[in-house]
Length: 244
Image (cartoon, rainbow, N blue to C red; front, side, top):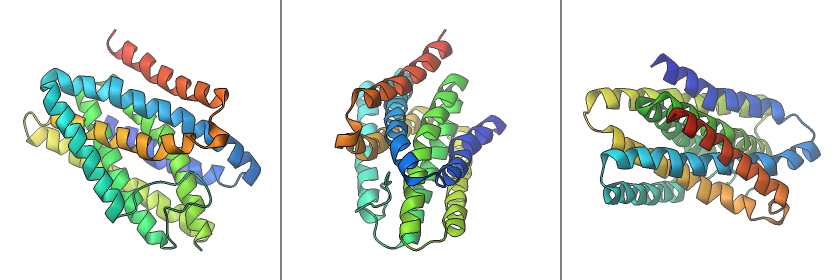
């Protein structure tokens, strides 16, 4: 449990803190590094979901069952996105978010809860998968938190207030980790089902938020694709080490 909580602190809370620091960079510098952060995060999330988490779930459940849970999870997260703003921004001006900053925070809080669950469930399978999931979430959280902070500032929040609420929201991942950990302890055989749902969360974020961001003209160059491959390669390295 301690290892899981430390991983959540790194994956969610530390990333939110770093995002707050990075936000003080010059706008041109921030605009220059964001595409690479997003590309790298895309590679880590997709590889973790498809090559790390789903195969583990499929070892304990029929593949059809895993795919149905994956489909149901993606549809559920899509519904959440439509009813509560859960999509994350990666720019200072984002059409997805209205002026209501607290609605943004509420959606981010829910997302962080599922991140914490994903980390806890992954560590329940193996340390390698837990580390892999933590790195993937950390890589995504930095550009996501940067985007959300920028939108909050644009919506009238002070820097101190936006940073405070982002940290509070990130801490909810600890509750998600505790829920995932105790669910694994209390309900026998729930692990593979929870893994499939965790994969749905990770894959949905990458395909609904990150990949569309990469489709913009400023993020289609070979260097951005190399950053994506670097993220994927890092995850495959952890995966091969864990099965060595």
